[in-house]
Length: 203
Image 1 (cartoon, rainbow, N blue to C red):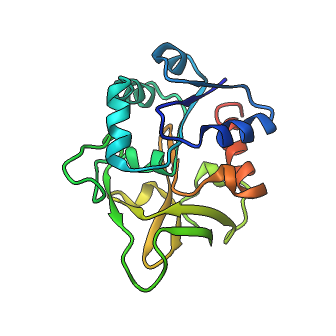
Image 2 (cartoon, one colour):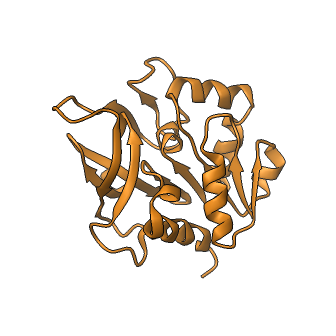
Image 3 (cartoon, rainbow, N blue to C red):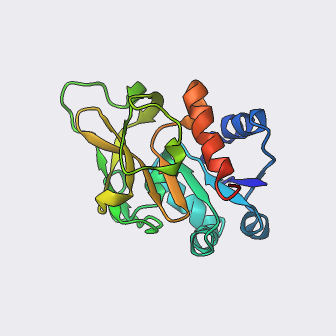
């Protein structure tokens, strides 16, 4: 069973729908025991970094998410869910992120391109990410964001894309995975990425 964390900041239904299409059992929940007893956990999210961290704190989910990471339960952050895994964001200075991974979230520089970045961009796949098993190089996925990740450890970056700057589009460290893009909105490629996540540990 895959737990999808509900903290009032997500496109939960589209993630749930995509996983059910793949035949996966899902549970949308914010209950600590449900989350810690799940086979895998997903943290989706759209909105602002500061508001999302406030919600995670209000629902006592910060410690729960850190426990998931510590227990080696496969965990996937999507879009804002990726950003929250890191230490801080320029969107809301002074607000601490989860700090599970090292790095910062920066505003996409204004170089004449539209911000927020909304649309399809191709991925440069690096460092053999397990989410990208059997995914062709330069596959296109769907982004919606104004801020981007710059990870401190280059080796955890598994995909990049270029939009005004080099964006760390996906990371993996141990049992923790994350995508800046929306796999649930990225057609067949996105479904394959979600399937790869669902299959982790089943090999």
